Image 1: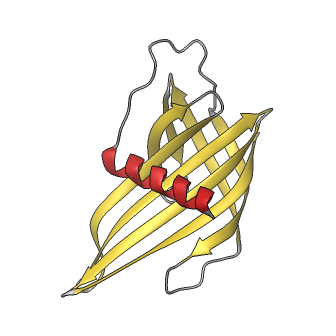
Image 2: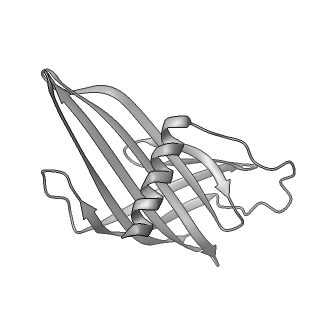
Image 3: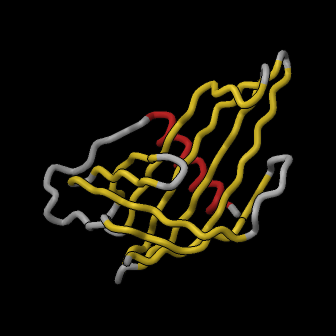
Length: 150
């Protein structure tokens, strides 16, 4: 579980900071573009609602140099290649009103690791912080899975 918490922390930091960067040359950068699909398995859920135990997913990934953009049916994530076998993308939505008088901040991210032969390990994490009047609550959901590129 420590590994998942560590990955979640990295996802949140990336989403908040919208950091970029990378090395000078792109010659040795792994190419991750394409359509990836697989199935997630729920690893943790501290939110006060039920999440599906397994979820099928599809990610359309575009890449320019070390910059990566992941399109999902729900949203778009941006990030960077990390190391020589993966990437990390994230998104932060600030103060979205989810119902009358309830505002939530949502940090979400996707991490691909160990990409080899059109397969890779995937972690998706979402953290919510909601405010209503003087009340505050937070929770997080983490899924892991394996993706295959078509």
